[in-house]
Amino acid sequence: MKWIGILALLGTLLIGAPSLQAGGTGVAGGLPDARQERIDRIKADIGAIQEMDRPRGGYEEYLAWCSSVSSKLRRELHRAMLLVSRDNYPGAIAVLSEALIAANDSFTSEVKGSGPMTKRLVARGVELDRALEAKLPKQSLQTPATRLNFLAEYINFIIKIEADFDRAWYVPYYYDYRHRRPCDCPEFDFREFERRKIEVAELQLRFTVEKFVDRVVHHDRRRGERQWDIFPVGLSQAFLKIAELESSFAAEDIAGTTYAQQERCVIQDLVGLSEDLYKYNETSDQSSFPDDRWALVLTVREFERISSALREHRNCNERDHRRDHRD
Image (cartoon, rainbow, N blue to C red; front, side, top):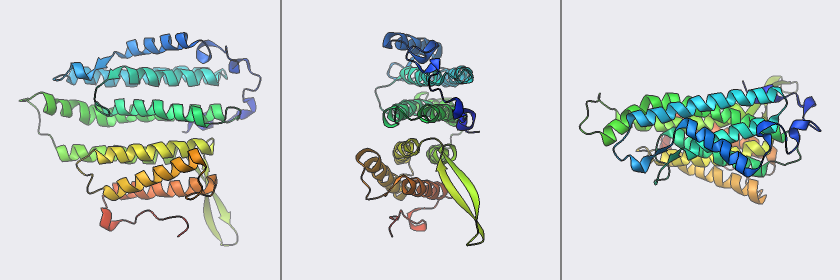
């Protein structure tokens, strides 16, 4: 269930509520030093890991770190829900934002993008949240709920990938075969491991559409058939910014696999879409999208088309490529 449904009673939308004031309650306000102290406490709870110091490490260390991140994020989600029940949206946002920062800071590496997928996702969560904080209008009544919805949904996504990919594939196999030779390990299907990375990339695209877009059915009397309307969950600027970054992230993940050549058309389409969205979001360039409505509809179509192609393992010669909306 989308968090926006929980948060939708914007009749209580916090105007004049004490929890919205700078001081707020608990974690909502406070000085930067206090914020850093909270982040450091969460980081200590998770347990820091430095990949460069463990060249031959770590099944146990990596498994413990991934599990600890999921456990801590679950607890922070619960804390945020309690704050929402008290109408303290800024406090809930701060709790989840600080949890992502702490999780990201608790794993350091000299190589960008190395480590478990959980590390990559928490880093992206921090980047996405900062982008939304900068992009969403400060005075909009929907901004607190929109940002909180993103944080909650994204953290749940991290928890899912940690269990389904990192614990099942990355941690038990990758580090055994990369760092523990010879090892008493079961046979490892590396091609399937690489295919699972593409599945994670596809899940990121599907997640963006499923969690930040709603479809509403209505009956078209003139045509005598049912039609679907597409609406953003929260502010449209949030969906378009998330889609801009997630399309780039998915392209990066696919490009890093052994299937990159086979999936080159998908990579090109995702990079092109991300660039078009960046120009629309940041420079008001309307050459690809005339308005938010078109940008929303066309981006959803592209995400769904690319997701379908990845799930069905269609190569460049078997799939339609991206078309300009004016064609």
